[in-house]
Length: 248
Ligand code: GLN
Image (cartoon, rainbow, N blue to C red):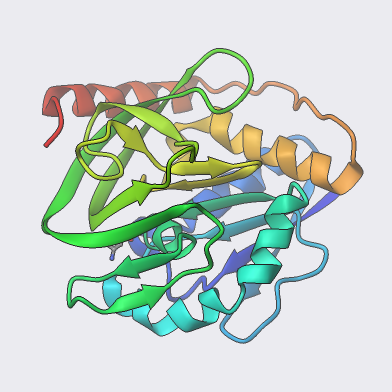
């Protein structure tokens, strides 16, 4: 079995080693005898037609300025990928630019792809620290996600938009709403770096399962792995978030 991952702007959007998320997907797939083919997608290159999963990492305002026009021009191609149940993970700067727009710290309005129903405006104080979320967007019981956030952007979801998680500790989208990230079908946008997937292996598997379903048109449940090490990493990160306490 082969799956194709489109890794967008891998050189420009890779803050906090966000490419580590791709390494986790590769390894967890290979442990199940699934070959993941990673295709970098840079400015001006089309999304590969055989992509099952799109990944886009985080970046500073200046990196976002470089790619905003390119990402906005992909509105149709990304939207049809998501409508067609393709799996997608977008982190921080990438998450912001998959919304309608990001007004950066200089006040410039960067256009986004409009895949997620949201808009982001940079605030004065950065929202930084460990985060613990409760995620109930997927089927089954709500599950914890631990990560790290560092963003100036305050993201406001449109009415009816589905958040990625509820903030237990940390700031989340804007430090006020109590929500973090956004989901649409098998697409997830989130502020959590770290990278995100090493500490939250259930989420990596959720994305792989959606990618497998996109490829085969059939339901897939991946075989469980021994995640003892990952669970202790998540416990440590959750403890740090707990020690940090409440919101803004
Ligand atoms: N430039 C954005 C912000 O500060 C995103 C930062 C990031 O990806 N860490 O809100």
